[in-house]
Image (cartoon, rainbow, N blue to C red):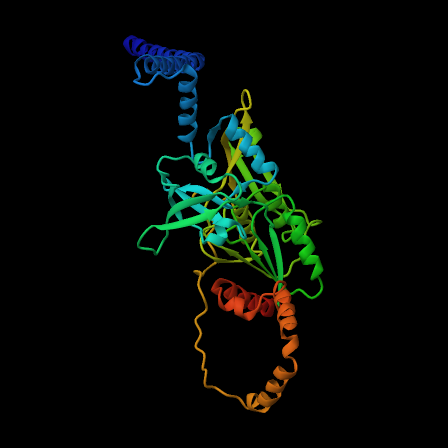
Length: 441
């Protein structure tokens, strides 16, 4: 009995000892973790300093400590992601020029896709657009200089230049057997972002080419002009590379009256934000179809994705580019800065855009509408009016040029049947919009 008592006490003391050991070790871990972390930082910084010293002493080229530090910063930031980079004085100055005024360039937005310099989209009406560059074109060379291991900012720096100067690009395009040479003359890049046209009497077509500071205002004006007669809207965001976040939120708010539009989440709580729709800013609830493709990126993905999540519009076309990250430019010293990715965008449903993009509800590839025309079909009406039409041609020969001018002017404000036949995505969008109007009464 005595032995059992001692045995029990023995077990109790062992358990108590283990408890004290575990408690003291946990307590020790809590108290030593910050120190370990600081030691790790110091060791890493010592390693970095040692490498810098070795390279400075033994490298075949005589590089200054400033050069080595700059190269180290460049390497660190470019290895974080495709959109983070180090901006030297000249790069930072060029960035300010780009965001604050006009500049000489090609008119394309580029990004990195699978390690290759890729055209996100040519901006409508710019030299690149007129030269025939297309979304998803891969740029192999710029003026005979390979783009392998070239950063986005280095590529942009080379492509931007004096207005009127030529540049040669070598591109790879899906469906083409050989690389294609593209000759472009740089021009002033000043962009009209919103184009509005009528489709018949009932539908409004709105094309947004990029998100500058007046997009939501201009779209709002276009909608209000057709208020009362408009039964549906086609919003064309194809080849729209993005732009200002507040304009993407503002544009979506014109069509959505409640709920989240987009949120951004970063490592730090201060970078977490949510943007919500307001019923006071919503101006129309008519049926909508949104056109998207591989050149739709960033802000245009936010708009299309939010409208899809709210079941406010039908998305038609192709999967978007997948650029859903937030960058900030942080000045450091002497006119230099770092551009750093601080957060990612998330749509109202919680899904991410980054590297995934927005998938259309109805997938339609670009092309023309294939039709068969019977050139020999003659109607009774044609026979009756034949002589009458010929006489009109003779009488009005002098005024035909004036009629042609008036017709061309009218076509600027309307989408004709001929235009839709050349754009199967637009034609499908119009047909779907007609069906939505019928279903919704």
